[in-house]
Length: 315
Ligand SMILES: Nc1ncnc2c1ncn2[C@@H]1O[C@H](COP(=O)(O)OP(=O)(O)O)[C@@H](O)[C@H]1O
Ligand SMILES: [Mg+2]
Image 1 (tube, rainbow, N blue to C red):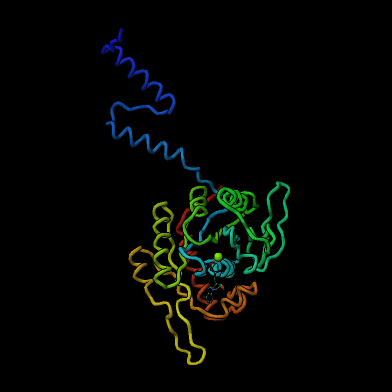
Image 2 (cartoon, rainbow, N blue to C red):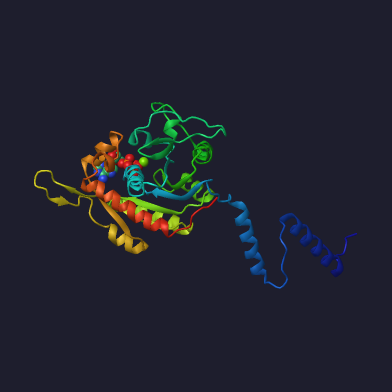
């Protein structure tokens, strides 16, 4: 004999299933709202629950990312010159530099640090300091000559250690040098930390600009303010006739306009910039009176102006 579902059976069944669903999902359906509104509220709730919570790093007032779409455009060079320039123009501020490029750390070479960090009483790694900047890099933890085969979760756990297992505080600014692209490292940093802002480094080549646009859009989507663009290797001066030429073209301005961000600085291509990085003393310190050093100091001033307008962590 087939059972007959009566109206009262059915409404009882509906009530029970709604009760069970609400209990399981911890959501109450607001009968004053439309189905669509309830659905949207629920989606919001799931999204909030699904994403890792953003945290501050204890004692770190502001976190600033250096990013680019492509590799080799000068992020690390910008990061070391920016941090050392910040220390010159704001000597009373404490500055940190985190090398988040787990696969290809450059900070040990560029900041001339080749030791391993010590653990403090709280089992946290003490950053290594040179030129007044507190630094941490995967390169301090692994043998420089051994290949780094960090993948997926291992990258994330390495990154987590560099961020959370380090005695960073007290710091006014923590500058993070990121790997090329808009990959897992960036997403992980953005989703787990309160990032104050980002700086995009690019060369004026079309191929670099295209991927820079992707980076800018990622930051916009994640509500991270973009401080501006650094156009690196902007021009080169012929050492014989002293003519300045833009070998990579000059498409940056139109892209900056399109993205509604400012070009904060144009850094020339100069052998002193590459040499000083290779020798472990950023050009800002190696040739402090040079045009290159001046350009980085001006950049640091723009960055300070930007950071002064942003929120400060008081934890
Ligand atoms: N403005 C510049 N003039 C000359 N060489 C530069 C300049 N910027 C970067 N370089 C050199 O280019 C190479 C790549 O720079 P790097 O900062 O390591 O790039 P990224 O971190 O984006 O991969 C390095 O050898 C660096 O010394
Ligand atoms: Mg780099």
